Length: 337
Image 1 (cartoon, rainbow, N blue to C red):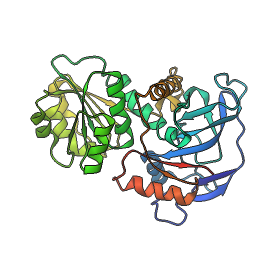
Image 2: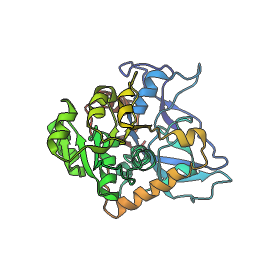
Image 3: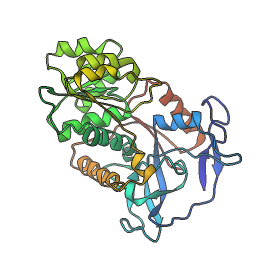
């Protein structure tokens, strides 16, 4: 089968950074589904792994986690889907990625594709939707009020893939006021289109801008990027007993400033459940199906902003370059082999 992979970790500007290859078609066992891949999207984690993870000598590392396709075969213990079902999912970081014609995925982390979306539109959603949902409702628990805190959430990096879906989930499922950050006219407009009530500029100090809005101290802050640059501002602006969450990887993060306010700090990695096969692993499949319902009812829209075709090394390199530029908005999707 066709696939895209690499044998040496490193920067994207090398000829062999991503290569078109041919690999054996995998065989499903246990609770696995074999999915014929129709579209994939590219996330910052793809670039992060490509830069740092070298496979064993002679092996190929295949990236990609977001995928949409149809079930082509299934293991003997897989009971949740039938051959031909249209599905979408974000896969497991511990297994081969989805940048291949056929891909194995545990059925517990698979959802039914939104009916109103095409393959490319649906491929933009899984990883970011799971990340946003788990942070908002499992980690920050935004349905539980913070005594004295304003019913406000600040989303830092509102125009990125995770921020784009987080804004929509907060608007669809809560009554919180959403403040998003964006620094360029096009990203400010994007976050407003998605439902942000207010947009502030993350290239300038955040605390004074939040104060100027006159809404009170936000109960929740969700940082999707550049956390190390903003943490001092967050310490100042967040409500006492508020909840702060982050998903990026700062080399160092001083959280002592939160102690005085008893602010809780939450990390989110959407791969945790599949990596450790936690007892609630199937929750990811369930929440993807819930997101699909929200999409089909018109409450949530795709965060797709660009489609490249076909799925090959050249187009994947282009997508990685744009992701690493730090200036992309929404999601980049590749479709068709």
